[in-house]
Image (cartoon, rainbow, N blue to C red; front, side):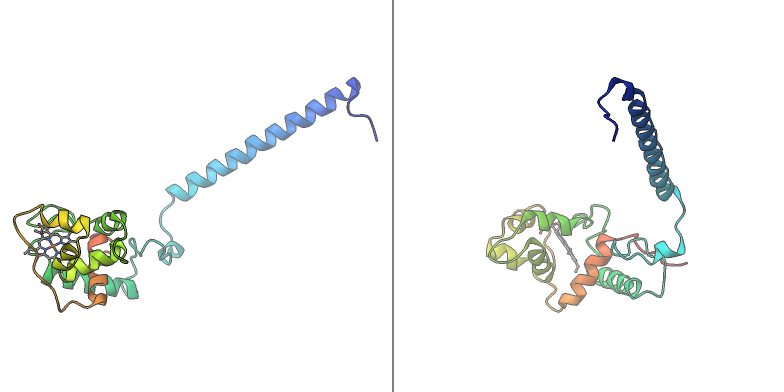
Length: 174
Ligand code: HEC
C-alpha cells in the first residue's frame, strides 16, 4: 500500500475530503427537501389512516374513533355544555387541555392526575375531600359549583374527554 502520509499523496487526499464534503452537502439537501416535502404536501389517503394523534384529523366518518367522538360530543352537550365550552371561558373554565393540566398536577394518594380528573368529573367533591391540591384550588376558583354526575360511567367520561380535548378534531360532515 502507498504511504498516505507522504506529501506527494496530499492532493488526492484533499480531493477525497472535498468529495466527502460535497456528498454531505448533497445528503443535507436531500434531507431538507424531504422534510419540506412531507411538511407541505397535501394529506393523502394513507395519511388518513394514521391514528397516532387520537385521530384528531380523522376525516373518515365511518371510523370507530369518529363514532366515539360523536358520542362524546352528545354526552358533553347534554351534561356539560350548560356551563362549559371546550375552547372558551364560561360559567366553567375552558376544558381543552384539562387532561394535561391534571396530569401535570401529578399523582396523589395512589391515583394519577388523570384518574383524579375523572373522579372530579363524576363527583368533584371526591378529590376535594381527599385533599388533592389541584382540585381543592380548582373548587375555589369560581363562585359556581359543578353538578355531580354520579351516573356517568368511566367509558362516558373517556368519550367526553375525547371530545373536549379535540373540539374540532373530526369534521362533522364530509
Ligand atoms: C353547573 C355548571 C357546570 C356543569 C354543568 C359542569 N361544570 Fe365543570 N366546572 C364548573 C365550574 C364552575 C368549574 C370550576 C371549579 C369550581 O369553581 O368549582 C368547573 C371545572 C371543571 C373542570 C376543571 C377544569 C380544569 O382545567 O382543571 C373540569 C375538567 C370540568 N369542570 C369538567 C366538566 C364536565 C366534563 C362536565 C360535564 C359532565 C361539567 N364539567 C359540567 C361548572 C360546571
